[in-house]
Length: 403
Ligand code: FEO
Image (cartoon, rainbow, N blue to C red):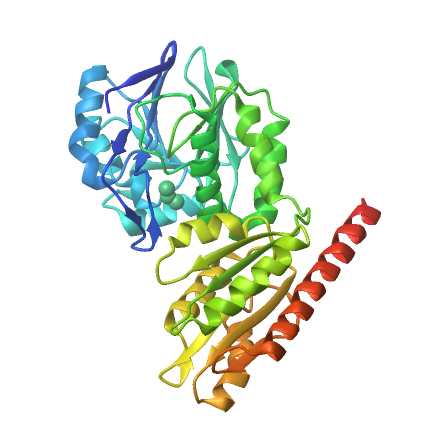
């Protein structure tokens, strides 16, 4: 990515990763990503905010050379994960006089992950103010969105805050600022679901703090810069809120169509009752899409079958992902079919529950059948649909009364 000017003396010098399709060897990246790095030039001092993924070192070095800085005085490390810190050693080689600014936790992790001499790092905290001459750097400690070391860097004179992963989006685009709000909204929601949702209470807290600051630009470390901060602030408030949205998601896997018939029937009955419902055929689904729908899910219904004397591995894998993402779902049930393993079939509901200890849900009676679904099975599914609607209605009313 070529360098781009955010405003006078503030530049984006990061790189776009058009081709990357998987993050952490786990998270699908349908639209690639970017590793954003920024330069703020003061009247006396210059600062580099974060580096980029080490695999993109050549482009990063080229950008810094193109900018043609005589010196960099400080390198802020807002977060030590290697996609942002990986080229800090390179930047230190280019600008040996630079001092790395990091909080205590970040310093500890930088030294563990990278060849950086401890003496090159100066610890900062929420009380630290660094003067660049006509501008200042202040620091907001923001642990657990999503590592314990996270912090944000704020330049009050320019009304810009650098938030590392927080409010970011995995989106490869040449647009410096948000131009297509719909596309960025989806990419940022996917990012929130996959990275931030497990830390929802922290997200609520930091979003509120940012909303109360005097800010014109939010510059995260992935995706375009927000030059209308309210766009992402309102989205984060909505996604992280405690509000019960009443949506149902049904991740399922079906070997001989019996479970598929059951989940389709259940979905139809819910739709007839006006419930928003989304099905995910797990062997073919993008788990990122499942994650996005977990943001508003009130009920999770697993659809699964037994294979080789255990619940289907595709459903087990999805359950472990759901557990890691800690959605705010309130209710849980299971529907499914098995061929011959009566005892295992009966246990399926509890096994999925045990795979999701961090998802605090109330159990709704499962509907599990041997072989093809019968009329009796469908009547039980009618009952489950009714039960889900009733529980949603009660939960939404309760929320309304509390508020
Ligand atoms: Fe984009 Fe937590 O690194």
